[in-house]
Image (tube, rainbow, N blue to C red; front, side):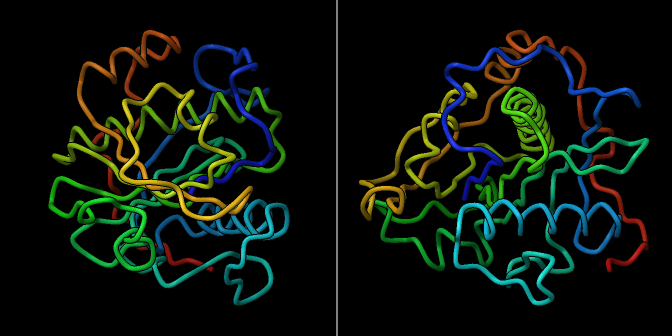
Length: 235
């Protein structure tokens, strides 16, 4: 699902081009598995709790009252994270779930698809796309753009041809305004702010280059290799 620190859409926001930066330098993106990068993972899960549970009121799990964690946050779960390297600040992140395994659309939201849930080694689900609660709307959009490019870079490197995701309808305009080539997979279900829909986002090099050009982010945002295997354990 798609969560952000503030309500509203991004159609009326003129974000600063390029990468987010502060007095300590510009943001960086990385891919991390499960319990690696303990401090950054903890900060990500804390921000997820503040945004999704405290601010948006989603009925989710917080085993310690500080972090939002569910059954899909496993030892091998892949996260793409935008952060401030000098301070360790979490700026935004997304959780990726292979469609061939347990994932939200297949397990809990299959009814949102008019046809069968897309499953295959080239299909991956986007979940928990969140920007940090302390960001302004302009900064949040800038971080989402960096995350979007990271998603495309990862997909093209991993052989992913499309992403799926479930989103609440109030966030749909903000999500689509990122510039993805996306289409609904069925009719929305629910009413008002609780209505949800399933989307699929098609991945190709042409779209990635269009996003790079539009946002003045010419260089790759993910380091190579994209997935680290550090032994650092989580909190």
